[in-house]
Image 1: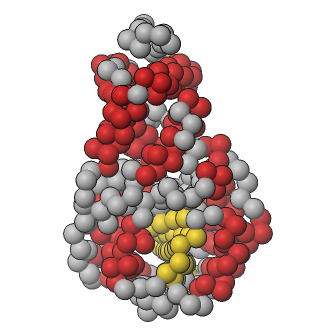
Image 2: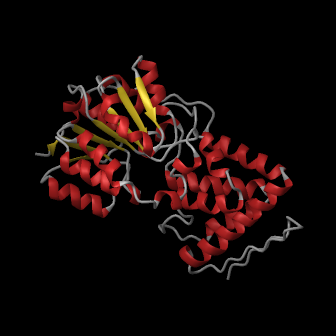
Image 3: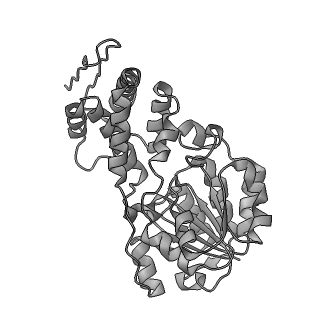
Length: 337
């Protein structure tokens, strides 16, 4: 029987599931998905000398409208078409970027053998667990998920549901094409079984990944107790599943660190920050633009993104065309009318 879980309940448990989304990492200096997507595009425009075009495009978006650019994975899908291998290079920029207050709190207070599921590409939960002296195993591919039951009897297990920079290209979920792959049913069932009757805590996750819907819904239905610390509004489908399972499920929307402060009575540690991620992605784009072939590919990427996304999908008041010459990189024109 699923029941609401007060956050204070989780500290007395010796095992369960923590599902981490981008909202768990945000105070370390990492952006949420939509912000990361815009930052990558901005860095590419600037690196190719077209910063003014990016500013003009941003201005076409009326106040209160949704983000002009598509989600992170769609941006990398476009990029992979013109710069093969760039998705994994972008993932490298997420490594060693601080440790959030939430990761530190969870690693310090959740003792025993927990299953840590994350769609994040950073390494913050691993580094937070290491700082506490905890033992853990990281699984970066779907094929390794079959080992979960055995490993959980020994120590913590961290599962990178969409892989990370150390994963094989076929195992990551960094492009929308990869994310839209159906999650294998037998592996989804293994993850759900690991949550059966156990406390399940979702932190900073928006539940927007279609490949993981079966996992999220199964864990909600079979958990022993459940709490969800939001990063904003969750998807209507998951919201409906929560409502159908629990008449009064625990949802904390005031931010992860504040939720733990309020319900655990613990002052969150200061997040550890290193080189800002935005500087890293800007440096990556600058290096790409220094190579003539990659610079040309960046132009094609921006042209495709502008013509296929901005004009068609987001800005009905703007007629946008970015014209790129393969031989003369400076031949770029924007028309708004």
